[in-house]
Length: 256
Image (cartoon, rainbow, N blue to C red; front, side, top):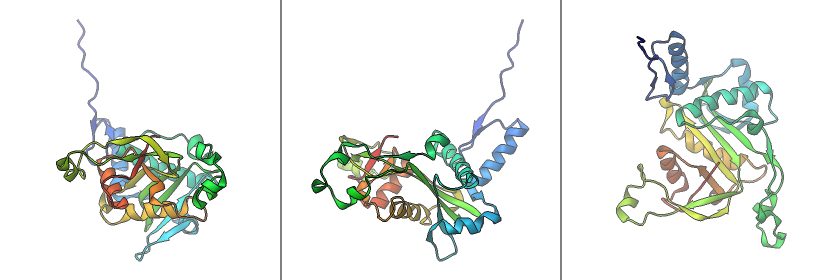
């Protein structure tokens, strides 16, 4: 006779989203470490702060600032950005983007880029060149990263449609499903991931990150909001998008 005692029981933390086995000492330690990063922010080395300040694209009145990390940065800074993204991905339930893709370039090959210059806006003309595929924006306060935005160069996105039911429209800030157009529109900037540490939410951090991404991602231009899209947002991401765009519908989403 064989008795199956079963495996150790795992659980998912309802705060940080990490799956771990409480009875496993190593797992429990990893969870405590990750949980601390999720709630209070990711620690940064003091020696890296001056260099990060040189990557500053926004500064707050309290000494906080937003720094951008891109493919040409040192391996150490790209690794730190990857560490922050691990925290973000775990909480959002998002897949990991491999470094080869994360730090690559992209070239506009859309049909719209082949139109004559006479039919294109100045914004579209200036964006028709190779650029970083992704950039990571880190919101830093003290020696911690307490917010992050992963922005992506995109070509197409789909408009969010207004609910047909007036009652559903009143509830659209909650968990109502999003309906999108079947026809793609031109787009430039995708918000692939956006995150604020648990202890620092509802303080304008996400808005500052979004504004920084639109003003910095493409050199010398501020990407208009109608050319910005969110990547299949969560419920909270949808609420943030509606607040930032200032409309319930008509803003855009894209598929990664």
